[in-house]
Image (tube, rainbow, N blue to C red; front, side, top):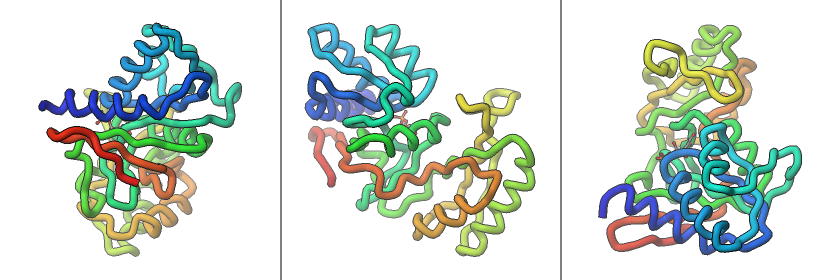
Length: 229
Ligand code: 5RP
């Protein structure tokens, strides 16, 4: 089974949690895209859902496939969000933001009664941090913000390259017009402590650590999909 087939398996298992009438948060990334494609088949067959997309990219795919979209302001309380992750540990702490949508993803997930993470088994790790942590920053003073992040990390014994994300020769901009610094700390033994340090830096808009947000994860491997709570 290749990686795409595993993503489809996880997405299909997540779809079993979706009921007609639900207000859904819809994630971003290649795994979330598989979920959107399967959801669109159900919608075409008569299932009624309203979705709040976590990115412009997801919005485009949903609209192409006929899924009804609303803004989060129209639907500020959602039943369920389904989204991918870049890494997850046994406590369902996540690193997200590889696709640059972490701010909207976190806002939407936190507005939902439940968040289901869908992933292939390569995303499951013992300790977070091999995947560089995306940190969304305001463009104003981003160099000063990077230095503040470096200092905050070093107070926790963390170090590593902090790279401004690029899209070709241009700086990558999020849907909200912010920049992303990808922080290669290698290991993040205390995600809560790092989250608190980052949240205290004024230029940091949001970071990709999702702590106590996911309710369950559906992890797909060659043997099929299993649920982790
Ligand atoms: C986007 C994300 C994605 O969920 C994460 O990058 C996983 O993507 P993929 O399913 O393509 O591996 O956080 O901001």
